[in-house]
Image (cartoon, rainbow, N blue to C red; front, side):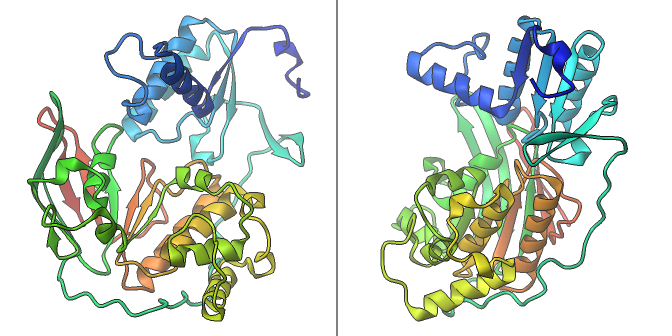
Length: 383
């Protein structure tokens, strides 16, 4: 038991975290036994992040713990779900000891009166709140150029015309009309369960719900004979879970070059031109001296920066960044946002940034807001 928590040693505790949700999801899949979602017809797998967290919180409260550990409790929650959870935790604080672990200072509960920082394997108790101001431009060098010139003659890369999607009786999207032009910088917003993931799957060609609808992807109407690969070759894509696919011993140089050849890892001998381009990206990220470092030895924030660079290294027509700041601390998230702004400003790539959390430093030129209704989420364009 860490110093300062001795009084909890013999008390009944509970953990509210994403890892607990994943554990229960695995239990549900392996044994076909619903615990967290037993009061609904849905499985945990089919729930949104917010719905899963509500189910876990409800279950933990039934266990009546004497103390509760909140591990980044507000990650992946929209504002409404966050406010609802804060209200429940505030009531709980009157009868239960709370330990909040957080990466973002804006998530700190207002009634927390003791603060510590985990540093060097030890808990350092703080007498005063930490304050960090914005630093200088973290990426002062120019964005590396595209390895080859891409020719695009279409005025729009993506065009959706009155697109609606339902799953059984559940209506998800209602008459979405939206266009993404070359060089656009969009942010996609919406509460948990509003259909953001469904909308992305229509764009990437992964959803069969796109067939029969007026969806145009890179100059072709969906269903006109194109393959999923025809679509994906124009898209750079990053999600936090994508990092888990790189479990081998890949150096940073190999990671970046693998983005040029669309492979998980590098299994061919790279050319000098590919090495030079990877070197330019490492210089931009301030990781030149680490080019032979293994990817899995980096911090989570550094890994996310490398994944962003890998997705962008070919200057795709469209770059989709799905929750790129999830699970990052304030400093790491700020660096990712700075890099995204730079990629959008210094290239002809259209950038789509998707997040539950509003990043104050992000500078999109357009916002598509999904607002849920009984007929499915409607899309409101904000400029």
